[in-house]
Length: 175
Ligand code: IMP
Ligand code: MG
Figure 1 (cartoon, rainbow, N blue to C red):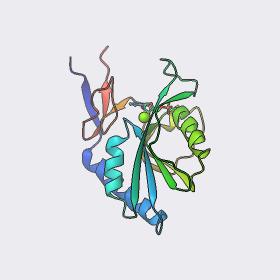
Figure 2 (figure 1 turned 120 degrees about the horizontal axis):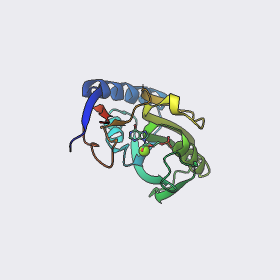
Figure 3 (figure 1 turned 30 degrees about the horizontal axis):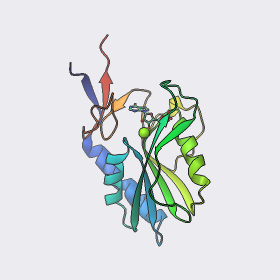
């Protein structure tokens, strides 16, 4: 029935860190506008909270990608399920992700977006599991580095569940 979920990062801690990243981005992009590209669905909660903490002008767009096939250790080839609505040419783009794991998805996504000629392209992720990295990805803003555990909440899911948890939790697999 219900899975056991233990708290890894409390709501207050996540909120405080997002506030800090928002302040940092506001300083780094002073005098410019930022165009946030939210990677659906996991990054939606983070993107909304982050956008509220940025004080320079913000525009938003959304993109959805999925790995080819069911293989969790993906080949690094991802399919665009939903493309952006607007052009990113000449915009200061920040890709907002929930988590960087192997790095496959982001590495591919950043390559595609770079070809569209943004004025600048940065990556902001709420969580990072550096131990799992297969492909090098330059992350500009990281909320938290976490151990190699499967986490849920704050947008992250386990079989589409638990995205709405206001904290980051670890699903305890019963054996
Ligand atoms: P990557 O291509 O391996 O970096 O895959 C990253 C994607 O895998 C993320 O955008 C998530 O959708 C998913 N993912 C990786 N680790 C977790 C986790 O611990 N919980 C939930 N989703 C995860
Ligand atoms: Mg994701």
